[in-house]
Length: 341
Image 1 (spheres, rainbow, N blue to C red):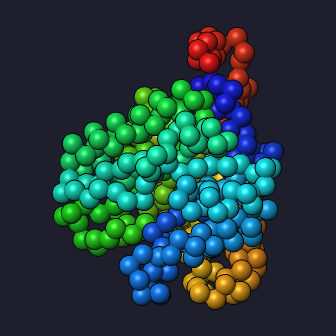
Image 2: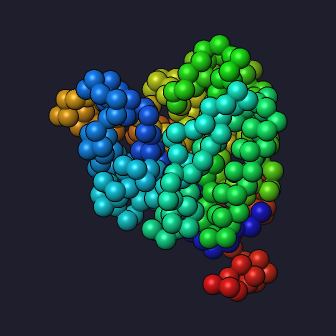
Image 3: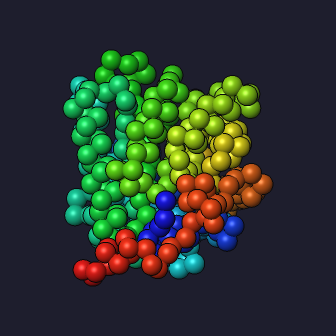
């Protein structure tokens, strides 16, 4: 694999000088909107309350982050002006409202947003979450695959990294039904591994995987059996990858990261494991800010140190071959892809 200049530049912007991703997610919508609405006793959380929290996240956590993931609904309009130009900017493209069918979930973009718009606003990468179950209906699987292909094609066209997130979820026939953005109870490692294997195919154009633990976070116990599953996930990814927290607690996510780094992960892109405890003080804004600057920042520093000690430099991933990630100006793909600009 070789990288075009825009993809190489965006990947470098998301990482530190040692090629490690220490990225904080601020794009969550239902996990923030729903508790606020419940506390206030309203159907829809007030925009200003959700946006205020996201602005606080950017203000308090960006110093220890190499990049931040913002959403166009709240974080971009309210907080992008607070994000340092020294930090990478990732923008989420998928709508948090998905279609739930008998055969599985279907993803779609946020209205009036696109890869080209994210590129035009100065984003360093496009992030897309696709709910995926390899045992969903054939129609749903094909739709999710086609959706992802289209995003990959657009990211190639506009020369911007494609950061792809996968989450398994309960089908209609499963127990533990939920539409929350949390780790599926009783998930099967094989569902995670088969999903990674599918989207590692070149037609999807993925540059970085954002992956969930292949076992329930509470089962990440340091054993060789669990490590073997993480190792297989890293092998199947076949390119740089980072871990997401999926609502795991601080201790659980710490254990997940230890397995992931041993398996070759290049860092993390996490949200709730870092800031959820602080958010639970809502609506006490003083307490929220105090905990974000204290406990949340301390935890972010802790897992960053774990990355320093064990994560892999993305630029040295074996997928790039000898010499690591690079851009060759004589590469014919560069000439062709920029001829029409």
